[in-house]
View 1: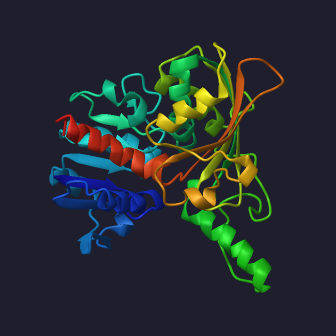
View 2: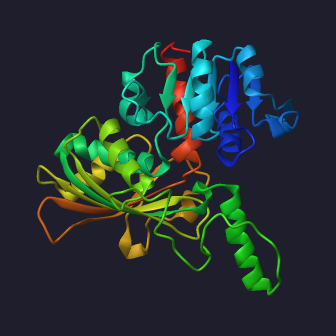
View 3: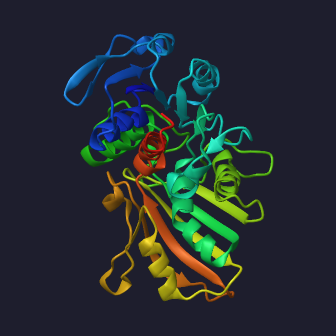
Length: 335
């Protein structure tokens, strides 16, 4: 199967290549795509070098599927052109997520809504993906009324420039040298946290915070869930962490909650406080699962649960989820 990766030279695009290889996706020909300045460069896939081509040349090559991770403006311009050529697009940007005509997919939850007619499929926001993978099986059992979530998000979610800023700041502090580094953020990120991800909206929330609200309702197919979010950038490489407080319609049993999560696809329960065992991004790094721990009752109000959710944002939060969508399409004969 011919597979295009649009944005192949970026952080997520590179991870998509890695995940495609690791999961032995049936790639017969890889078509790496990037901006005009990267055309002609080479990327490595399964020990073979492939030259980067333009989006127009990729369409002419007629891949069966195109995994997009090149930003919203690129997706808005090029995804329809790929789709018009009969190519299935799985897009990692925010461009199509809330379009009522497009499906927003986490395979463990709602891949069943996909059909052969879906030529542009949206991949959700990284912080949304890991939360809904953990919450959806509990929603099925107890019914979720309200979610309060605070995130602790890795700099890798911003991109290479942010990683360079963090490491540049750290190197300068540790080595007492003065090296130049880019500024992805307005303020230092090392030894700091930034309660500011994406742009601020008129309601005082950031776009990232509202993504978690709107995308969660769409994926879980329930517009009645009340959700409030605070998203924070932290000096971490490896994964996003989330403190999730969830109020249910029905009463729950803690042991049953753990059993439900242990059986849930894509979830690993790490919840042994007596032995200081709980999820951390340093352990979730380069893993595809969503890790859940610190599972405990909220003693301030009834039917309410606290949990800690961690996942590698470049993998399950982006590349792996996109590849899993493609795998589901292959399995169902839609690719």
